Each structure stands twice: as structure tokens, then as C-alpha cells.
Image 1 (tube, helix red, strand yellow):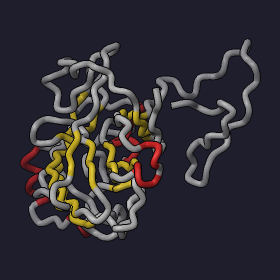
Image 2 (image 1 turned 60 degrees about the horizontal axis):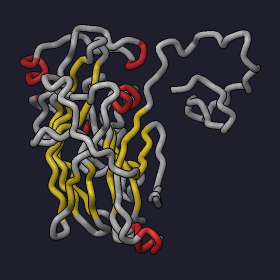
Image 3 (image 1 turned 180 degrees about the horizontal axis):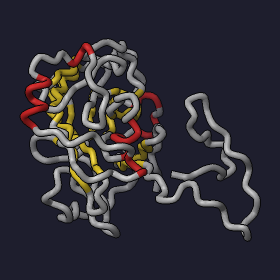
Image 4 (image 1 turned 90 degrees about the vertical axis):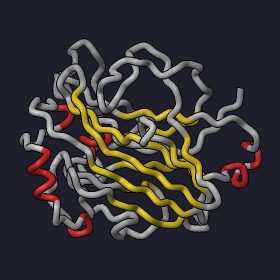
Length: 275
């Protein structure tokens, strides 16, 4: 069996794997952000492909509590598909309308997903956002969001790939991302995810992320032409007790090394607080 491997992103890993032949589990069907039952086979995300040079996508950014009271985040297409894989070619136009439908939950999300916003009513959110311009910022909370297209060669401006000022609040009108994939964009696997500073990790690890594939990898590597392609998204989850002391009977571990952002650097030694 030959495998096709393209790119790896942290904290989200994108891998192309042979298909697991199984239907999506029906567990948690009443939740806004559904999850497969533990132990079940996983299915691929739905593919959304550009047609005649254009890909139009509508996504809802939603939240729901899991059985442990932690907050899940997700992107949901009109047909209910979560985190669909966006497939485009260099030169294609992407028009993505994102509606923030996140709802506050009074339960704490626990240490893994950070602080929760104070409960507010949907009517209050609509009133506060009626005159809000997402391009000019807004309250930075666990319910505000935006989109970053990781790895694409597009400018950091509003409606394209700005994450410093763009802030889409709950009950804002649908916000449109509108840009063209550069003609010289290298083929391969990229991804889209929220980049609300202070809450990116909470939202990404809570489930809000998806693959974005620029077609044409077989032109970059002819050996890949005709091979089947399978997409599997793997997200980090933090340990319940990341600060627990190591066992006294185990070997001494190398010191933890942090990068410039304060995140644990992968030194290949197996050290650090694993996700």
C-alpha cells in the first residue's frame, strides 16, 4: 500500500490515510457539535469542491457542551456536515459566508478549554451587534470568532486573512470572506481555523478547524498521480492533570524547551507536557 503524505500543522494535524469504511456514529445527534462515539470508526469530512473556478461555502460557527460540561466548537454546513474539506485550484475564487451562531453556556468549560464568557441572552447579543462592523474589532471573548486560512498566500486584510481586527460577534449578519487563490499557490494541504487572540486554542481544540486542499499535488510529485486520497483531521486535547509530577520510578526527562510564543517546542525527545 502506498500512502500520500503532504503537510503537518500543529496543533492540528492533517494526514491523508486509507479510508475507514464506516458510517458516522449517531451518538450525540442532538448536539450542535456532534462527535463519534468512543471506539467507533471515523469517516472523512465532506468534500466541497470549486466549480467553474468558484467555491461558494456557507458555514455556521456553533457551540455546544459535551457530556462533561466542556464547550465544543464547530463549523457546520447547511446540510449538517461538520468542518467540510474545502478543495480549490490555484486561481479559484473562494466566497465563504460565516455566521457566528455560538451560544453561551452557564457551565464552566474546565481548565482544558479556558474561561467561559458570562451568560447573556440572545436578544442582548443581537442588540449589541446591530451596529457592529466586524472589520473594526469587537469584544474578545470565547464566543467571538474570525477565520484564518493557514498557509495561503493572501493578504492580512478584512474579508481575506486579517485576524488582528476582524471580530465576528454572535448574531452579527453573515460575514463574507472573498478572495482568489493565488495562481502560484503551491498545491497541498492547508487548513482553516479561528484566530481570535486569547481564544484561538480554546476554539481550535474545541473542534473548530478543517482542511483546505489546493489541488495539483500530482504535478509537484508525479508519483502521486492517480493515488486515492483520504483526509483525517486530528486535534490536540490537553491532559486532565498536565502539572502532575512525574513518577519517581521512571527515567529522568530532558528539560522542557519553549518557543518564542511560550508553547512547548517539539525537540524530538518526548519531553514536556503532552497534549
